[in-house]
Length: 193
Image 1: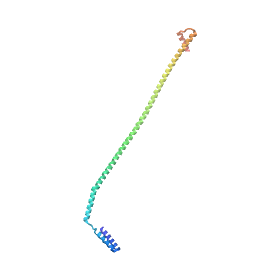
Image 2 (image 1 turned 120 degrees about the horizontal axis):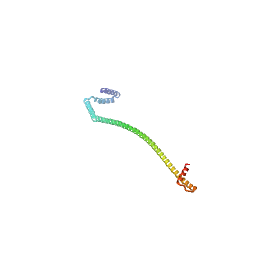
Image 3 (image 1 turned 90 degrees about the vertical axis):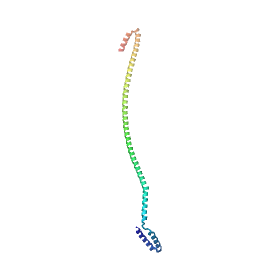
């Protein structure tokens, strides 16, 4: 590699020399001095390798491994959070399913309660209607009995008034007093007619 570079350098020097002999000679001389000092130096190469190795070792120990450890801890934390969130989501889905089942069960129970209440209310209404009908029939019967009783009492009172008036009238017509037996006999004859 250095050989190729030296060849390129000499070619460039020759080109410069051909162009300007005096200036090019100075430039060529300077370039020769600069590149002639570039030789392979084994002690310098070994020292450079050791320095590079130490730098790599120091960077590895002080920077790479702690950063790698931090990254690994961070990845574990992130994975733990992901796993925790997955478990929490699964638990939330289970709770949601249980809540949905409870809501469905509660709706079914509410429907049963409502149906039972409706049937019970219909039964109560029917029983009340029947009881009210019976009570109204009883009241009508009692009213009819009371009316019949009052009517017969009224008829009796009217008959008594009629009989008394008839007796008084008969007294005046006959001009004498009628006995009770005769009176009853006449009244019965009139009532039968």
